[in-house]
Picture 1 (cartoon, rainbow, N blue to C red):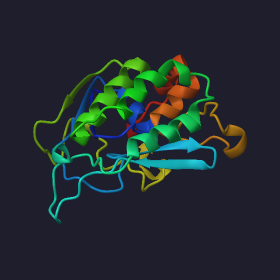
Picture 2: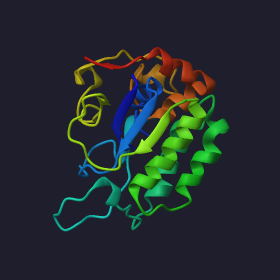
Picture 3: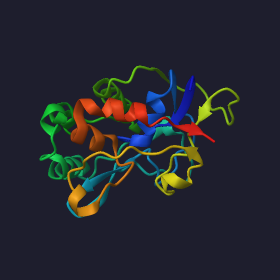
Picture 4: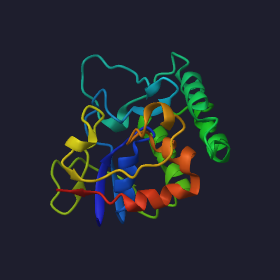
Length: 213
């Protein structure tokens, strides 16, 4: 794919980074309306009791819609400490956790005002660690439909199983921390792939070519 457009995502799923890996140019939408219960502010990790959602709380507005670029993170609760505790508990025994944990931990010590900035900085860290070579940019305006871009903004959603995305896509299995207990769980947060496979993550993304049918 030459160019893909994606919604912003908090430690997005493996399929999200597969789309990114197989594109030359990546555009991250920031002028769309913020929608609850999406990858914009949540990710799923594999914990001892099974898949666990981690949700970044955002500042609520009085019934009015707001663009993603304007969404602020809510720090009235200790969500950062809770997220890091969950991540550490789930992955501290994984093969490559010690290689990446310090850099990731910084995101749970510092504060970003806007969700888009927090997500983008995390995404850049993941791109660097995964060896993804692409040109990325944030959108400068909202375009409802593109004629020459693979548009994943509405396709990738946690509300729908990946098999129902309407994509030509097959996840590559890899060993997960709790594989013996739950079997292989596809399309968890990208950190699941990174902590479990380390340098091998890039090759897995390469094998997972993704196309819109």
